[in-house]
Image (cartoon, rainbow, N blue to C red):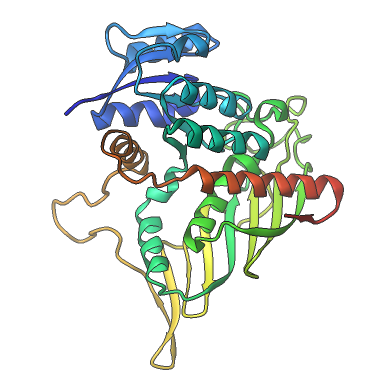
Length: 357
């Protein structure tokens, strides 16, 4: 089996925490080129994950000149579009970390470039590959929930603000929890509904806790002077078919109702949520019931039923798409609607007006 020759641009947290370990574990990739504006990070990543003769660059323009099958873009959000477009134009297929881009205009250009060049563009929404997500998607495809006319996208943390890298930098990232974790919850929700036609968006964005110094934050106190993004954001999304989605996101919020990368769906036949594992609620024999699918094999002696990690399935799916023409699960034309809605929430919050598409 031929391995794909891969190059990666951006050797920070998401590369080392998600993509590189999964690529190595899959055995499907030869990582032959590493790029980072901080050369030491690229050198370190090469040592741990690269081939013996892997090359190191500080300029991505040099990396994409190499003989590569695929390029991974794991940089701050600001440069996702620029690097992805350049890589596709250089004849490489691209795995771009979420969110697709900092704004909708850039995301559109990415889709247009993919179509023009015929290159694959995959966006890193790995939560689609979780067992609960895959099971619920099959239910939705089989119309077991009926018409889904109301949904909630959950991405709430009580006190878990990422204090490393450029997460708190609005110029680099385009926003805070909304664009960081809210994007996962919204992607899951739209995917389950198979509805990518927003009509109107209204949003509220809050910067209420970033100035605090006693934070009880999971990753240590943040620096208020560096905290330029929101700490919570909320959206009310009306789709063209009349369906409604409520999106809630926060890194820091005084709440005990914490959930992340989860969705709740309300349909005409049944409802579903991920609040306590996957739960299906419906009426059967004139009684209200709740079903919890057994998504593991607890109780089977000596059997590890954890299954493959979502990040590993993501790498295998991307490989199959590139090598064998398999389906791209996270389609760019879906991901750019996520970016479109997120941008509209920020715009609505800034102007105090409803954004109409």
